[in-house]
Length: 303
Image (cartoon, rainbow, N blue to C red):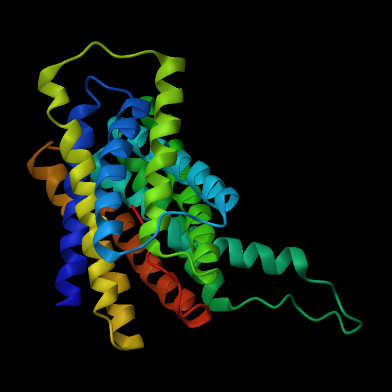
């Protein structure tokens, strides 16, 4: 059942991407983040009440920092979805595991001090190969599938994955301090609402279009359902092996996004682009396995 819950979560997140794509025709990223945040606050408050989880926290600064990074990732992801094929934007956002591996490699390099015997820096070759494979997949996916007008959207999509990795590391820190995931997600929704409101003040309100507005509510609802399904999946895990299976099934979201891209939006992605996506999925799975070995109690990633 835990595997089915994770696949369902991936389906919800991919379907949310479809709603974002349609809503972006009339609303900017700040507006969509605001409406998703409002619905998220209501949903997570009800969930916290049903779970008897208090929403007060001793770490407001850490929640604020996590929200700032998470909102940056979300806005970048929403923008990328509006400019790129859905499958491409989803894949770039799911690069967070590869980015985390890249940070581990970079951290090892920065903290290494040559000894008297001039030993090599303490890096795992598996991590290095995972990072190289992931970024090779990015090159294969972006170069053939983007025209010059979409290059900026591709860069923003890469930013969404990188900042998502930073946000995930902050979630790990909060989890180690004993903060429940429900509380963390609630404050992220609060931060999303505040950041979206500030963005709306800066960019102004888009003219109201009911044809596009009908997609705003599903964005928030599907995000909440996806998070709930993911939490349910991890709550049913009984062993490390089950945890690894569940964690890697999140990449089924890219498969769903690929189906939506071809069926709903008729996106033309060449074969080498699909191969690039497959390489990124593989490197993301390997990075997840390596991360689980280093941090077996790490919380779930969010999308």
